[in-house]
Image (cartoon, rainbow, N blue to C red; front, top):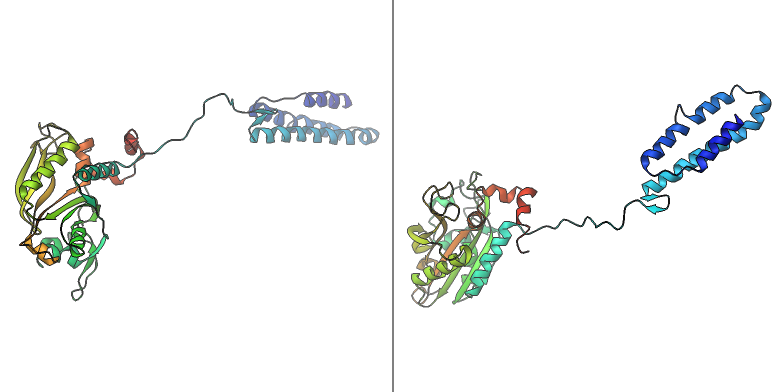
Length: 344
């Protein structure tokens, strides 16, 4: 038995594992429930009392040696070191960090702002929770207008005496605040999030993002509006993009129009996005109604102006050929990674 212990002691002293698997094999061989040390202790029970006095201390020291050897290498492996050397090859290139990118809506919002800044437009912002006056009444919405119905608006507080409080349905409320607090000329765009109580689908959502614009000064005409928007479309979608204006109605503009652009997805051939017409409506516009100017304390006989509003989601759909606007708010990394090549 003494010879076995001496032999195994020499084996333990020279043991140098190169992997966790080798260390585990060592543990099983010496310290396992069916290992060498267990067998030696079983054998120790059968020796004479004289031999027990001699071998007891030797056997305990042998067991301690095996346990310390195992623990020492275990700690080295856990700390990333093998026999005093780095576990990983430090000459290998690093894994690096995965970079993010701006959201596609943020990219398009920034591009829209930059285009209108070239034309002298400033950026204005306002609260997302609005009162009835700034969201509806000042913008010439009659009391019975459908936009006031609960099916369209998220009302926070219904108050017939002091006016309802609601999540804004458009950023036109920022236009009202601007005109109330100053005098023309005004030339600004109002980007922001708006809310409407609509069923969520590939083409609609209960919240979305708008950019509205306002220009008020003396002798502003509809021709100025058309040239401004035509320049915007050419800058955003590229030269050759066709534009058309269709008569429409908005309570706060008169005359009013909707502007269509040629579909960049199907190139006019017809697809689901353009409803097989070759055209996609991207914004509403018109000359500011004189009542709106007067409501804000501006002389409508001296000043005229135009206003327009567009949904950033619709613009982004066309620019990047995205067919489902629900993708913008689902935070799917596979979708967002597609925009990492964009400038951030």
